Amino acid sequence: MPIPASGAEPKAWLALDLVPGLGGEGIRKLLARFGAPSEILRQSATVLGEFVSPAVARGIAAQTSPEKLDACLNWLAADSNHLLTLADDDYPRQLLEIADPPPLLYLKGRRELLRQPGFAVVGSRNATPSGLQNAEAFARSLSEAGFTIISGMALGIDAAAHRGGLAAKGASIAVVGTGLDLVYPARNKALAHDLAENGLIISEFALGTPALAQNFPRRNRIISGLSRGVLVVEAALASGSLITARQAGEQGREVFAIPGSIHSPFSKGCHQLIKQGAKLVEDANDILVELHWGTAAPSAVAQTEREEIESDPLLSAMGYDPVPVDVLLQRVKLPADQLISRLTELELDGVIATMPGGKYQRLR
View 1 (cartoon, rainbow, N blue to C red):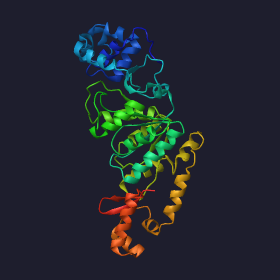
View 2: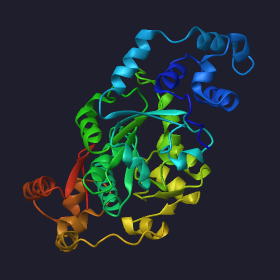
View 3: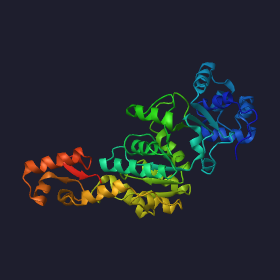
View 4: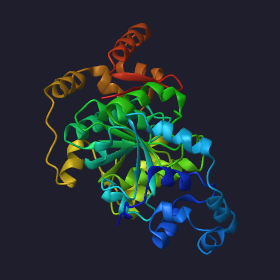
């Protein structure tokens, strides 16, 4: 249950969060004993040493430097910036169900999105064009159905999922692994701005926390914890997305995966999840039905596109695996210049994409 709010001023919460080495587990342990951050800060190092290490106890008793606290309070003064703690009535109930709920979260954007049903879409940073298109399309359909799309603002599948979520009514939440005064990766600066304006960015890490490798797997439990389910779009066997999927299963969330080519390394992780019991999905309705959420509206445009594509002999010859030009030459019996011209047209239309090694792949 949330800690009583009495005495739990933002300044006291921030002071605890800035203590080196204390962490969420230490804060929760002290809250359970003393009831509020302000009470913890009143204790001596000797008393605190019964619950945390002597070095951490001394750090709490010494109090955080005024400069650091003032910097955090100045950041909170902006209208779009918020601090969410276990003392707040709108702390997400679903996060209280996980094994390691963050005692406080820094928020930037639309705080009210945390009250909406969430669904996570995650996958490879080095995604294929087809994977990016699938992530954005699934996220948009689920957002249109009323889910807020949750992901980690990484390059690749995460970014595509956020774009899809923001394009419909459910919007999107990014759970990041740095302080919210930083944008990582820098290439997602425009996306971060869009999320701050129209969605929400959250972090359990204090302002100024840089991009440390160990923090990204840790934030994944929040991505899954906020969600009704998790969809893995593309993932290699060593992908961090599999960590999110595993944590989702441990938290009692539904896990879904999109299958792919047996030859693609980006499908191996999804196939492994399906073997382990994740639900195979081919469209957003597979997810909505499993979650008893109704069905997505059919798209007349998508149906027309499918009919046009299926009538194209070159696309039929390509199949759905990446294929080199010399193989296509054998399949379609066209002169090389005509084949290259047609491939260029299809790529400009967004129907196919160039892959590494001079191969081509259908996108839809």
